[in-house]
Length: 114
Length: 116
Image (cartoon, rainbow over all chains, first blue to last red):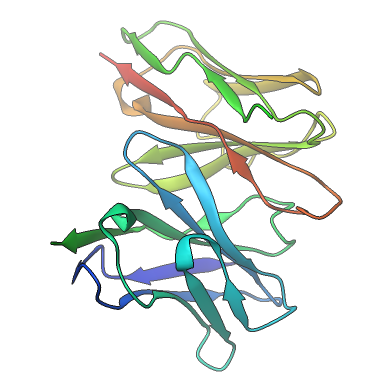
């Protein structure tokens, strides 16, 4: 069975500081990995996805994530936080590239301090 | 392009009543997913369809829950009878089975259900 663990239910950073949101996965097959963002009272929006083409994946809004098989990790980073980045972030895993359902982590609430 | 459309956006009902949630996927998408989001359990997959056929309904919590997809542009999730523990935000998502956005799921805005 596949699963995702997101370390830290809340992460607080200052505006302009590095954002690091952690995600570790468990999968019996080479995984497909996703990061989604959810703004208050909205649906989820895809930030980026890993589909084995490249280990460093660039997404929207300046975010990127690196797939590390040896660490079973897919951490999300952004060099400089902006106030508009404040939201809930979800890591998700799929065995079939998302064609099947996604298994989500519990989410990390990102707080940006002015 | 219109995104995934869900209705109603908010539903308040009393325990024991029937609730029907509706979803219109993005045109051209041939996979549809229903998820539930609660504080306690996070985001959970309830059921998904490929080409209007239910593929995996193992996430449907009880027989009180049922989902249908009569055609490529419409799906319903029904709860009968509803219970307070069904209170949650229900999301519908759609995706393509082939093409450049293969596997990328596009989410609707959700339906916030409150069962009193």
